[in-house]
Length: 373
Ligand code: HEC
Ligand code: HEC
Image (cartoon, rainbow, N blue to C red; front, side):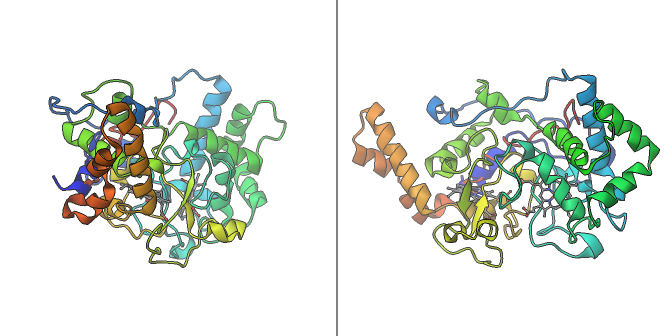
């Protein structure tokens, strides 16, 4: 099997293909999950799986205040009155029926202008260690306040202009009181961020990958399991790890070969530290099969492209050979032999290296909603 394809199949492990033209009303409907074929599945080393963590839909046990806050956040998320020209809401660039993205290489903001970056999915964004490609915002509550007043996005003049707009809508005043019952003047810009953040914290999409992590070996197809093993073997897991299969560190774009597009220096633009040039947050790979195009600059058109871009990085060679040394201790194989067996260097030269993307469907949630959204 073609290896990059194999990698992308993992992300398909959980897919059910969504309708070609999803209807907004479809939010909340469960898409049919494709039945995985009977397993001939290889066994995966449980030590590898411990690097990941399954997610579950929120349990729905929330106080009335939390319920009101999430409902308010949802209203705000869809409300175009939060943009200067009344034409953009958060959902314009993070469409919840399209896995939280806009499918543009870079997003289109106020006055139809293209921004400089690709819009990441809002699903699972709350679970990442920091917000934005360059980590310039600590969490989704803080992050939500940025696009509303960004002149290239929703372009409101300032937070006061936003609260003035909301105060003019009687329904909102009541909704803010319900969501923030202890506040005498609850309609504040910070509370806008808190409410949207509360809504986004519920944007969690369990997939077959989660069932697999929870012990159901048949949840992934044999091809997807093979894709995962390759994903581990060539070292993708040294960066794409944890609950989000990403979202837990910054790493350099263009680790070996310089990234083709150096217009955006990533984290360096915030810290001005040379070592941060071209450092970007490692994105989550949850639902990755559904969120093309890829990368901060939208330069990866397909999942096979995007996975191939990482297929031979130095860190991957290093981490894969460390792993094979470690695993050789337990298995009784000689380190040299085990290195030879798993050497990603050899894979890199082989045309068959184009195979890792097949794990992608397993990471896709068949449902785009949760009790909280
Ligand atoms: C014009 C398109 C556009 C609009 C409107 C927009 N966003 Fe975004 N969003 C983006 C882009 C582009 C990025 C990446 C920017 C960056 O990293 O510098 C982003 C980043 C984010 C992130 C960080 C995700 C991550 O993985 O780091 C979150 C969360 C988010 N937006 C939520 C929102 C919310 C909430 C709203 C409404 C208040 C909103 N966005 C409005 C385009 C948009
Ligand atoms: C050295 C750390 C590192 C390794 C190893 C790595 N990645 Fe990544 N990956 C990143 C970073 C950083 C980005 C974001 C780059 C950017 O947009 O500038 C990324 C982005 C991606 C994307 C695009 C995600 C999106 O939403 O735009 C995919 C797909 C991807 N990686 C797959 C893989 C696969 C498959 C492997 C193994 C073959 C791999 N990665 C290995 C760090 C890594």
